[in-house]
Length: 527
Image 1 (cartoon, rainbow, N blue to C red):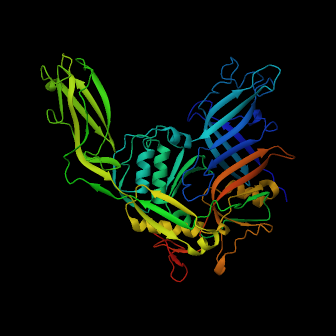
Image 2 (image 1 turned 90 degrees about the vertical axis):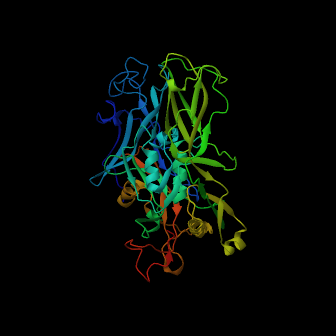
């Protein structure tokens, strides 16, 4: 039986962050174009571990028929613009059904595009982005090497450096402790989202933003057992979908998985020069002035592919730096008039050089010492499924685990991924359904979130939850898309879930309720 939403709303923070939410749904032109929202991970391959930037798009009535009765009410350059309506304000989308309010999407307004012309549509096209945009834009350099830290602790260290924090976060305790991590900052590896990918791959976990019933916009870091131990489908869609994408090719079949782990070596003593200027500075530092220099660590032997540093030593006058009246090192020695303050991070140093004297001087020597942390040749662990290779031919993929040094963990990851991807029968790329077709479907669309496990049964394609040996097959929601469009008697939701395969086998995980009972679980989870 068809079912209807109690209500839905597009809300914005016209009074700024924390200033309260204003419902602007009355001005949303749902009949002109659907309200579209997307979030999560829109793919389901072995390396699809971190969410894309989520988006929400909608049109607003910019004519005199809107709630303000003003043309240009949603034009930032118009004198009639609604107070507080501007780039960067918070946007939240919520739905209410069955007495529960679901905050499915949260972010900030990025694009405001009023259609010009008094005789044209008089609409403003809006695009909002979720918090993952912050991760995609934030440049991260100033984090120290993480020594003997769990994956969640490394994730939290990066997250803490992002200026705008998510509305809420759910960070699962990591399974792995990395001997060293974040020793690869610098160059093109400084974007927070890239570091999230490194952490997620090394843990084989996931990073995404999801909705909830509290405020929306919860950032999640999953460890690799979060999904593995969920073996029951929360809902099963049986011939109720309007779209089902199953593999049309062997593109997502991988019967040879090679996992790359990277061992490190570290200097015995904090005496290695990891940064130094190669030529004297050509510009003098005036009396009372200061300059800031960022320096990348380098392997003095030029053999390591990447160099981090730890146990770094504060620069010592004369030993680590000298200043002279002339750039070539001649003239008065002015070292006593200068101070050098170093702030050390994973693979870079920030040096603040201050001239406390009255005479301008040149830097003629500048270096930083510490224990070098070197990444040399990688180790590769391989897993093959010979049966799949015979049937489909060799299909290989290489998965890097940048912060893993343990090849045994690499082998476990390779075995796990090969088991997931060796057959196209395990895979369903996405499922689409009309949520309002029944209360069960509407509840599922609103209540189910990323990482929830669902079942899919469809007669024509033959997709089924029945797996060999009496096991139940399922798929984890990896990404969510809503299309909200008008219909009688009220707005309709077309929901699409991108799906990630689950392993039909049960796993034995120590101290995990439902997964640690002998003679019930059948496979040791790699931990």
